[in-house]
Length: 341
Image (cartoon, rainbow, N blue to C red; front, side):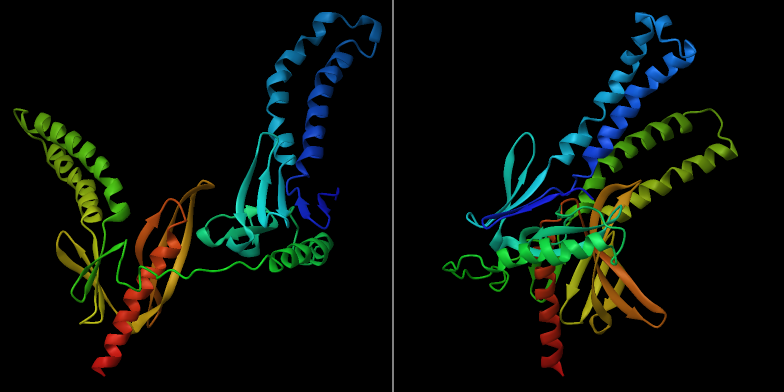
């Protein structure tokens, strides 16, 4: 593996995608060689028979060669740990920006994403994707990983741990004061705000107009067939699903020690607090593309566990505050249970 790092007293520089540069060079060389190979086959190896127009094939290859540019732009990306400024920077061929200060570093953990690699996460976004700070390794026993752990990772952690001591001014936590962002308090009930379910409202409106137009054309016919009647009922199914989704309400009832789920104003399901088994953070993808992150509550049941989805976040930054507010409410339920007993 080519050298992808530089360590000195003031900084540590890592190029996590350095391996893309030789890959890009190989692909470009292959694309350049293909037309030449075809020309040599056409002239049967007689170089004197090569004519200028034969090289027109390189025009076809030009878009493919230009498509290799990301190999080199990503290969030049650098993550810089700057001891003097006490910060982590991302430097590309276009710009340099600060990712976080050393005080904001939350964790450096290995994750499996198209290979094993280390990712840096900030305290402001613990549940996000993070920033890649290492090349890919085949497995935990990879000798390149052991080299990275012993030399680079240890140096990074030492640099962060030796950050300058700053005066810390403790600010009161709004949650401890009962100021909530994601919940509405009503006596001993806490209702989760609408949140992500509202995003389905435009789809409901659009489909509602379509359904009304469909029913108008259907019922203005002189005579309805059995298939027409069946279609008129089938169209209702997605509308009802939209309505059930949008009208979903989750209420934490401290007095009854239950988490209740309402749909269209009716109690749909309830979970008892004594069965609570923790949180589940689920990162969703669709065809390899990020599709949001769910925050769920887990509950014990005889056959295993069941889950209740509280919220769906597009960006992961707010998740930590959301969990903190939910834990505050769960603590209220726990303390109420103790006072009753």
